Amino acid sequence: MSLARVPKNGKVAVLGGGISGLSFAYFLSKLRPDVKIDLYEKSGRVGGAINSQTLHSQDSDILLEKGPRTLRGVSNGTLLIVDILKALKKENVIQVIPKNSPANKKYLLNQSNELVQVPDGIRTFSSFLSKSGIFTPELVFGILREPFRKGVKDGRDESIEEFFTRRFGNTVLTDKVLSAIMHGIYAGDTAKLSVNTILPGLKDTETKSGSVIRGMFSKLWTSKKKKTESKGAGSAENKSEFPESLVQYEQIISPSANLSALSEQLKQFPMIKLQGGLQQLPQTIFEELKKSPNFNVNFDSHITEVDPIVGKVTSSAHGKQSVLEYDHINSTIDSKALASVLPEGSTALNEFKSALSTLEFASIFLVNAYSKSGCLIPKGKQGFGFLSPKFTKKIDSNPNALLGIIFDSDVEKHAKYLISNSGEAPDSGYSKITLMIGGHYYNQFQIPSNSRNLKIVKKILAEILQLKVDNYNLIIRDEALISDKTLPSLGPNDILISYNLYEDCIPQYNVGYGLNKKRVCDSLKELDCKMSIGGTSFGSGIGVPDCVVNGLENALNVK
Ligand SMILES: Cc1cc2nc3c(=O)[nH]c(=O)nc-3n(C[C@H](O)[C@H](O)[C@H](O)COP(=O)(O)OP(=O)(O)OC[C@H]3O[C@@H](n4cnc5c(N)ncnc54)[C@H](O)[C@@H]3O)c2cc1C
Ligand SMILES: *[C@@H]1O[C@H](CO)[C@@H](O)[C@H](O)[C@H]1NC(C)=O
Ligand SMILES: *[C@@H]1O[C@H](CO)[C@@H](O)[C@H](O)[C@H]1NC(C)=O
Ligand SMILES: *[C@@H]1O[C@H](CO)[C@@H](O)[C@H](O)[C@H]1NC(C)=O
Ligand SMILES: *[C@@H]1O[C@H](CO)[C@@H](O)[C@H](O)[C@H]1NC(C)=O
Ligand SMILES: *[C@@H]1O[C@H](CO)[C@@H](O)[C@H](O)[C@H]1NC(C)=O
Image (cartoon, rainbow, N blue to C red; front, side, top):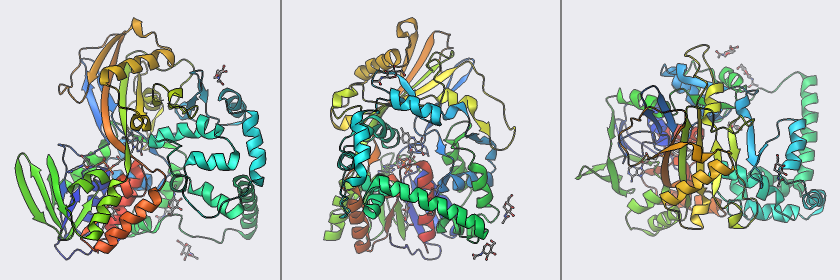
């Protein structure tokens, strides 16, 4: 994307106060303290999808994550996040899940509604093969034949399902395993998600070796050879393992970061969370930004028009309209929202608008459940939680449209502080889970009414978690409608159910996404305008750490 030129003491508008907008503003304020930054946010809070809410009952506070809750331990973005929290004196809230922790156990649902552990060793591997339902003659023959099937080299995009059908002759692996993983990350459908965008490694392997399996073996072979060779030669290479943006971050923004040492340390931890909720991250960055006289935030401020050519932002807050001009506009709002505020204009502008509007989104019915007893976690199935696959191509093979359930209390109970012994361990009796329902299924049929969805929730609790729902008193809250965050004190037979419907909350990187992203970038370049875009729609990934790296890269691009 084009480099932004902002003159000395220039003005930059940031659209959206989620983690993308905040991290861009944070890095920019470090790199260019002279620049005046206006942040526009339509709600009354920062964080966007990151949304930790606390309900207060007489004897305890209950933390409910309404969006993301954990971050991948070893990613470039997580390094930045940990270093930012350290720099802002919030390192005490960083918690990690060690590799061997019970909270790392993950499960898949099988078609008899049983949880099957995802393999983490030989023993669990063989049991996974038999219980997940993938060990079929169809799959075995498919794998044996794959090396002899002709490879396609034209690089044309196709869905994950089409790719597997072409290579393996069936969709056993995508139906029963991969579809579950895609439910967990994208709330998306393997019949639609783009293999080129989401699993580029698989496609590359086919292009280079003519076969996925042959390619995997030759990779194993060369990496083994390299290892023994480099041992002999006594490590000569010393190339940075980090992208250029992180190298610059360490040089310019945080000289004491020591990212290599931090990276070594974080490698032991597949997962990271924050005590008090992920909201601590946007909140901490926001508090820091507010200290700068050059930073200004506009809450409850709806963008109604953006003119990227002249750099004009029109917004309305509390019935009052404001029009301001900027040297640069950085938009992190979703592509649909952005397309809707762009004016009609030149061919390039219309092309940009139309490319932005082709991206599909998925909605989620999100339910947090809490009990003072351990009843919500199924017996003997401690862990991170489970994901539900599609099972078969038929839409009604997952009639509840369940994507997965996260066992929040197991993760909380097994989290350790990164900085030794700050804070106390949580009490052990409670259980807390999050159900994610809908996703791509809601694009295939109408979103059920809330009351219908609550019936589905009860069914899932009873049939999958084996909970005798009738023995419990359910306290149900439509969280978007109830502003009073206090609860009556909960008894042992009470289960709190707090739900929200998040419409169009996750972009779908479906077939054609790559070409479409190119259209967006090309038309933006041709416009040669004062706007750049970030966020998850056309940024560099879907997770919180991706958004932070993206924000850094964009800020480094501002000259
Ligand atoms: C249910 C759920 C679970 C997730 N779990 C994880 C997880 O476990 N780990 C992980 O890494 N990632 C997870 N993610 C993804 C993660 O939430 C996103 O990557 C990240 O929060 C996106 O941040 P963002 O700033 O790009 O967008 P957002 O957070 O959506 O921020 C955009 C902001 O723009 C504002 N806005 C929109 N339109 C306008 C307008 N017209 N005018 C003014 N303001 C506007 C919005 O109010 C919002 O605050 C999850 C996402 C969801 C939905
Ligand atoms: C970090 O970025 C580098 C360079 O872009 C990349 O090769 C590496 O895979 C990334 N690391 C992780 C853990 O994502
Ligand atoms: C699901 O798992 C259970 C127990 O782990 C097993 O008894 C059952 O046969 C499995 N179902 C299928 C369809 O594989
Ligand atoms: C390797 O790293 C060291 C220390 O950071 C540096 O001095 C040296 O120049 C590097 N070597 C190469 C070949 O980049
Ligand atoms: C980073 O930390 C490691 C391990 O603690 C140390 O050996 C190294 O010298 C540090 N590097 C810098 C540049 O401070
Ligand atoms: C604006 O921010 C987004 C995401 O944070 C980024 O992708 C884009 O490059 C930024 N634009 C500029 C000019 O920095």
